[in-house]
Image 1 (cartoon, rainbow, N blue to C red):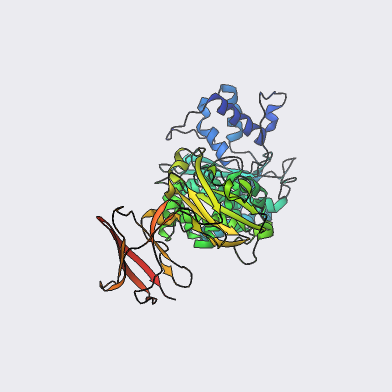
Image 2 (cartoon, helix red, strand yellow):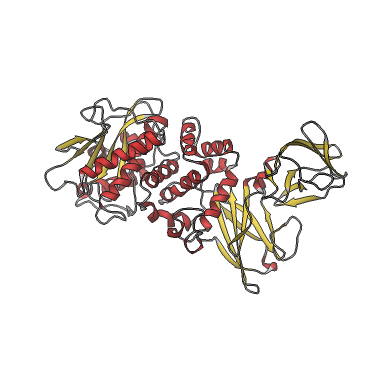
Length: 544
């Protein structure tokens, strides 16, 4: 049965996009249709892992095709016809395949059944996602249907079918019957494919499916599920160069296989905040775009997207020969080395340099000092979420400087190096610096542009200063008052020196009282005054 769509308005595609989509699908899934056909342009099908987006995009735009192309696509989009089926041991899946002829599977159906049940147990029973909705007996019963058939170079795809909610759908899964010549072959390829595609069925069936929007988040989530369900099968490694060599592109960019590589973003989130953070982001997807959902959930974990993105950059730096056993990514030694946007020789007269990066991206800049044999890598994160949604491919300029003496607005990295950064929107940027493979400054500056003290909480054993953002009255001195929660004055400072760091004016306090003693753990109140300008709020100190 082929289901047409009436409850969602397709975004009209250009003729060029329609043709490209048509040839991409046919060449991938049923190339026999194109025998003796001259394709008018090059169609690159290399390394396309999952057909989820292209299959469903064509399905929603089917009415825009010519009669011949529409018939060809309907042939591809119809449920495959097979001669045999069985139900997996847990009773949720029905597997359809050909027992006879040239289209028989090249791997064990018993092993596939175990793989499907394992994916279900992990994603539904362990992670707590709701199962996809039943398909109203379209596959012969209400079991979730898996079709094992030849589909060219694809690992598999999940096809939405019947609308059951405002933007939710039933679906079925199609996986390749033969993974010979793939990066991962045989049953292991089938295992990661069902882990991947099953989560697409969860996404579309319970949260939202909106084609041509947030494709990156659908794919990076499903690819990360491969790793979570089958950590010993490392098929995702083949895609990492697509991102490691182009990190200045927005993580919300679709296509070019970057979305598969960004499975490591979810691996990073899970390792730092637990599995539930990903599910919470999906729970927000029906109400907001993916980047907004990620940002909102990260805030509930007492961090910011900018700081998480920059920390993610640090994790990406410590890979391959830089990997540290027991730290950062578990598979870090197998990852590529991140590609810097530029590698420069250190001469103070060469700075600042002007560069550009996409929204929601990490830019790596390497600087080598031949006289001292020092290597510094700065990781510059642009956390501009709105433009990552509205203008993903845009680039935003910034300036970076490195000096051997302090300059106005610079941040001391060591006795020999002082970093300087400028952007006309400093609140969107976060920086870290790694000197000779040691972190000397990490993702703390962006947070102070959000008008609250940072770090919070402040730890004496981890932090040197609390940074309090403040816009002074240019004609007056600055005073800092620190009170206990009972309004007892703990610290008073007059003629406080202002610091200008990465485009932000701040008051810097070392967390000690007027007698230069550490404070007890607790909540404290601060007041910063300069003429008619007053800033006040709370800060948290932990004296471990």
